[in-house]
Amino acid sequence: MSEKTKYSDEELAEFRTLINEKLENAKREYENLRAAVMNSDGNDTVDTSPTFKIMEEGASTLSKEEAGRLAQRQMKFIQNLQAALVRIENGTYGICRETGKLIPKERLRAVPHATLSIEAKEGKKR
Image (cartoon, helix red, strand yellow):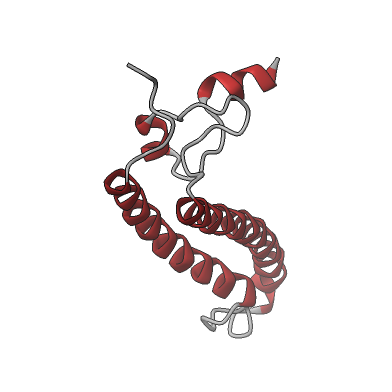
């Protein structure tokens, strides 16, 4: 029996559903992080006493920087998920870009935007 070279339409539909769920969650999280960076929730140091204002502004700046980094990371995750949806459409989803073999379903369920099998990923670390 020959080795399977691509996932069936039913399997791809399952992955598409999983990716779309993760994409919606990621977009919500991104919007929350963006709001934290933009300080659109209205929490600011304007109404605090001057003694604490300096400490609060420092913490606020640090918090905004961290939220900014997290927002950038979240946007990259969103882009990776969107790229995975494109791969489903063009028939290359789940195929390792190094080995050309199918990436196991368990890996794709855990990391649905994966483009490398575990073997190929570990091979790159060496």
